[in-house]
Image (cartoon, rainbow, N blue to C red; front, side):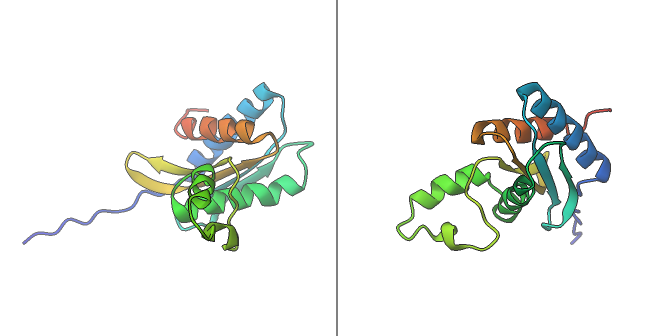
Length: 141
């Protein structure tokens, strides 16, 4: 019997850089300054940046949002909503987890490759910036 080896896709530095360019462009369009954290599928840092005039606190929040989405493979917003349906609100007690919008899992095709977190705007703005970043993953800058 032949077996097939399926390799997990990796998020490349170029793809993370493309995401950063797209995130910055969307943030500028919205008139906000954000921090963005991009993690690989193992939860390790791939790229982190803070736009000029973004608050220092936004760095940690972006990292928490990225970690949340990378760890649970769903958006930090969805995890927050799921948390509300649980009697003990268990996800509220996990270290390094934040239940605010702006964290999204990153997929390439069917492959999970990491998580992105954005902080600095409103919850809706952070989510829009993260979505734009993911859409720009394979752009040719």
